[in-house]
Length: 268
Image (tube, rainbow, N blue to C red; front, top):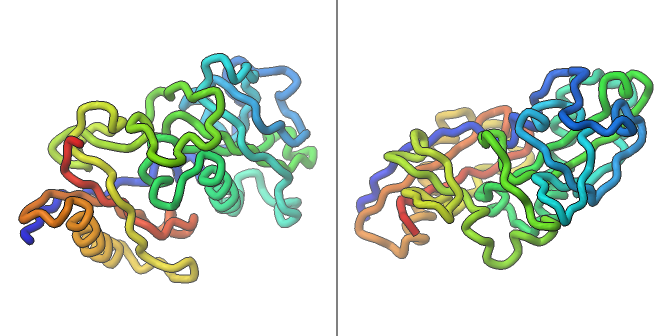
């Protein structure tokens, strides 16, 4: 075996959405007056036409549309925040960690994805909290939306009438992650239904939930070794192959990520 690797150390697209977003009075475009500064827990099952600009905000009051109409987001989970957040600041980092654990588990169950597919799909999710005005009045809720893209997307793709179960079985290549270019790091990220040179083929486990972050060098070394073995088997034991990998850093580790993504050089 003579593997040739193409290194990729990308930032996790979802985590920027989870842990970022500064406080603001803006609650998105085309807002519903009844939802602006709402203190009530949002409804699930509602669909919206969200944009990356909307998702970058901590609160959202965009008007819902019928799910039979074109939409880019669907609310799949809502609820009250735990009592531990009753006295929390609006931008408490613990909110992002709670959202990651809660929304990511709900997202996987809702769309029918396992731990590997969650990191290899072009679908992702965003979460919202009350506006600062509603927060100051005591509102403590969260809303999780599946969206037709991620934080690297300049626009979102329309979702089906419901995203429930859409990744079960053999997912359509239109919702799987590939890249086009000389390397994964420098390539354009595209759905696998488009012409591509790299496919996010497998995911490898790097640590246990209770483990401390091992450092970037250890993360890269483990990822390289594990992806080498994983893709060697996935490509049916070729004499030579190119591969890339994505490993995540301490903020993603603290959010709960314990996997790295392995990319195979392939047009299939």
